[in-house]
Amino acid sequence: MDLGTSYLGLTLRNPIIASASPLSADIGSIRQLEDFGAGAVVLTSLFEAQMQQEDRLIDMLTSVGAESSPEAGSYFPAAIAGSAGPNGYLDLVSQARAAVDIPVIASLNATTDAGWVRYATLIEQAGASALELNIYQIASGPSTAAGDAQADCVTLLKAVRNRVKIPIAVKLHPYFSAFGVLARQLDEAGADGLVLFNRPYQGDIDLGRLRWTNEVTLSNREEIPLGLLWLSLLAGRLSHASLAAATGVETAAEVIKYLLVGADAVMTTSALLRHGPGHLRSLIADLETWLSLRDFSSVAAIKGLMTTMSSGAPSHETALTEGIW
Image 1 (spheres, rainbow, N blue to C red):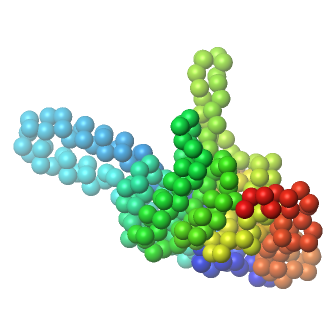
Image 2: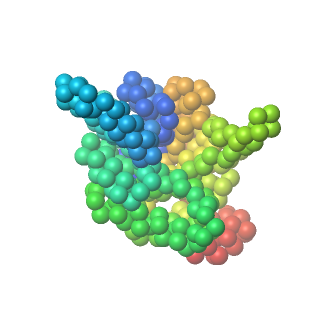
Image 3: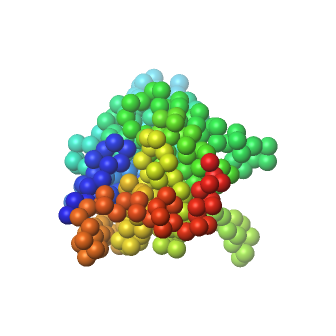
């Protein structure tokens, strides 16, 4: 049985990727993910906003009493500077590449154009197999037009693409007014892959304390229909970019569905946090069993069988396809 697939131009032993989570923030856990069968791993994200906060803290600590002791003034700032900034993340990238044989994909969430380019360059130098641009911002301002928000994503990708040579994936939320057009623009601008979808935080109100809450919730299998729809609409219509699914994978059933609508790879986080890295073995074994029982010899044999371009596509999806381009 051939479970292999290609994603971002990288060869994966199977299509199941352990996506960014606390499990991919530690070398020991990353080794476990490889041992249990992950086709690739996406490291926990580097956040520029966090780097900025750390820089402000460093400035504050090193400025207080800086002139009171010449000895402290020469030692304390250098000691802090050595561990400040993105150095810890870059060490994780280089150590992970040395520790495992599967592709190691870094994840970046920046807030400024300069930050995206700077950190992407450093991540490439650290040896990442590929880079995932985790574009998390939602255009919430009432003066931001839909076209401007989409153009900003394309401009950002081009800026990073011009500076790094490793494969680049763009991870997007679904809240764009013309997602099909944006996908094609990113494809034409040099994206090696698109990851569908990011899950923006959605706040709630604590009535007891009368305050907003912003708790992170794990995804579940009920969330896959939106990803299934857009993957089926995009599969076969992009000239270059590969496609990855990234929401709601709990069992092999979700993996199979995503492959059927054209995903090149399928990412999971919540299921591994719920059940542990060993859950990868179940996902892979159940995928292989399903293929075998239906006389499919490979993952490639089922990829895209249920896209909107196939003969059995539902008529309402065909109508959507004709309208998004």
